[in-house]
Image (tube, rainbow, N blue to C red; front, side):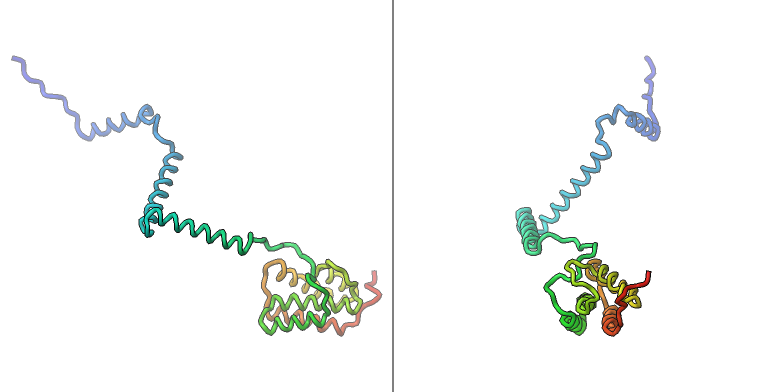
Length: 211
């Protein structure tokens, strides 16, 4: 009678390592999803969980969630129709006067009213218009539609050279608050008002600068 041969056994750790080596062969992973596929699947799983949680918290379940989303879309459409499409703030200087012809006194009155109300940006705009209109009324500038603040400052500096730098600074300030999105303050308005008053008492150089 032959003696019974005991079965061959492999230690557990060695068997695990052998199985890992076998399963790591490329032939077992040819049909695995790519990294992009796994990322897309994870995203849609997250999105599904998100909508599932939202529908569970919304009265009426999925139908209630759809109704809420529809109301949000309708509200956004109504707001868009009421306000119109967003408009970009112009970044290039435009014309100085954008309405009908008013006297320098009218612009000064409007500027002081804005200043009293603490509306410094509007006050600066009106005071700069008063400066230019006053120069036109004194025939130091020819009335010309479409003139910009920079053009007015450059032309006025010819007959008012002592104030050339202040005029250029005032024009830059006007452009900054009107087209650059900046806000004015009380000090800014005070400087422009001082310039306006100084120009009214300055004797112009009618012959122009010496070449």
